[in-house]
Length: 593
Image 1 (tube, rainbow, N blue to C red):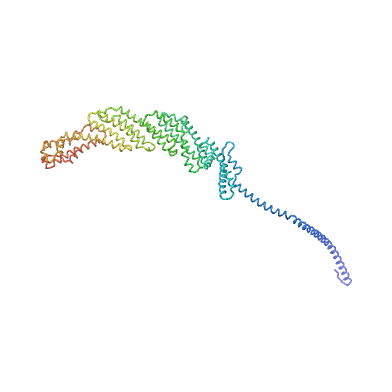
Image 2: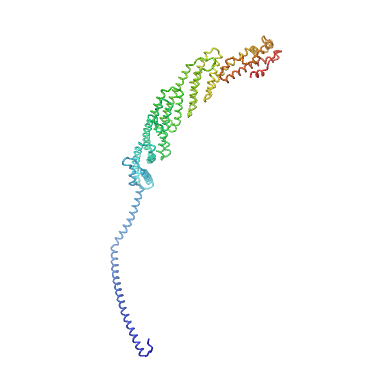
């Protein structure tokens, strides 16, 4: 710093400052000149760029004018491209909706090796059906007639070929058909469900099933007869010596086999509509069972040819009816198997009735004369035991017989009518009509006690009762007459019954005086004291307590009735009886109880 400032110093300082300022200005000017040079250089570049841009603009404008037509064409092409792309998408959507893919076409052709179909076949088949239905709808709803008709024709041909492939596949599968196979091959069930659309092919396919199963079930049946089954290792024909067991085993095997076939068919058609199952199951089982008719019928006829036991034959008839009732709902009453069983049942019944007649005649031919005890001879008991065995077979049957009443009546006619005739013939060997009546009554009582145990016997029981009452009437009449004759009451009764007031008092008629009446009544009192001594010996031989009591009671009633006629005459003052002692009718009844 300057401490002493004078004018010279001040001037020097001013000159120094001026020089310094001048130097700074020069430096500034130099630096500014550099900046100016840069600015001028940049401005030149800008001008150059401007010229270039102007040139480019001019050139672009010129090119634009030149390419205006090209741009118009390009725009038109772009619009056309968009339109074509839209059409392409529409066509692709149309083809996607109305055509099958390559994989679907291959699936519909089936396996080229063995001709079977796989699970891919059915979605493809459904797709083809949908396309066919959609094309029909397209034909109705739009004007694309030619395309719709063409698609319909193509899909129709495709479907026909597919169904043919499906049928051939089923045809091959049926050759190795079994329940286990169906469980493993769900495709087979789907195949039948798909064939519902073609009834004719479905029928042919089901016929193939029937043919395959008929061969299979026949082979299994022959094996069961000759080799045995898995559940029972013994062949059925080992029991051919026992017709009841033999035919029962055959029928049981047939029933079980048909149940297995029914389950197999249900598995096979499980994907089908209930109507298809309902319409075809019975018919299919009927056809399958027909394969067994001939061998079964042949063996049954051979077994029946050597059988003569009526009880066994009737049991066989019951066996046939039992299995017929179980099978008919499954295979139908018009099926060949049902008709075969019915024919065999009728054959068995014919042999049964013939054998029953023969057995009855054979037993009756050995019937001897009645013994002293007047009880039924052994032949009568044998006949009744035979009848009981036959009727118990009917009661023990596992099914109700439709014409049971008719069969009962026919059996009774075969057995009881010749039995009664033989009883009458045997009774002719007896000398006393009372013995005949007692023997006949004993036989009828045995018959009655058996017949009353079974149904449909009302008419037969009424007839037997009438015959028994007829024989009882003979015994009652004879025993009452014997008692009245032995006591002398018969004379009093006859004259009292024939007396008329015009004849005068009864006591005035010869043989009806008071003394005679008293003697007769005394004899009657002796009878009242010991009534058993006056009865017929034959009455005690009546085997039925009920019949014996009935005869005794009716005899007493007849004796009391005759006694009552006499007593009424004695009590009548007109008849002028005096000093005659007699018991009242009620007293007599009480004593004879």
